[in-house]
Image (cartoon, rainbow, N blue to C red):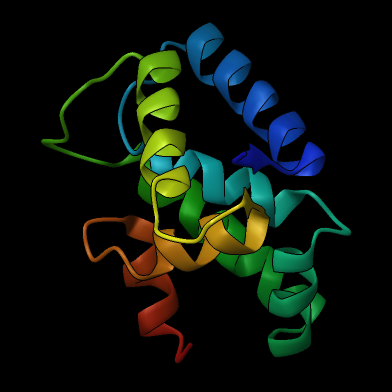
Length: 125
């Protein structure tokens, strides 16, 4: 049985709510990554904090917010449908029993279409 970690489930619920409320429908992977950056105590966040100082994390978070706000030419999607398909994609990986914030972070940072990928690549990670 595949499942989603409770922490990731909570972050996703908040991101879906926030993006629907704000009318956001683009850069949805980046919105999710931004929520992970802001959510202290996750495994993904702890790994990033080993690599970056607090002030660097603040600057990366702020830059990602600006990149998302300035996104041009990205296709609008319904957040609840996008995240449902995205989770299904992650859960369909062979041998994957549970997905966590770390799985999401790795996926987003390895996706060259995301602003998160470009930002972290430019900052040497």
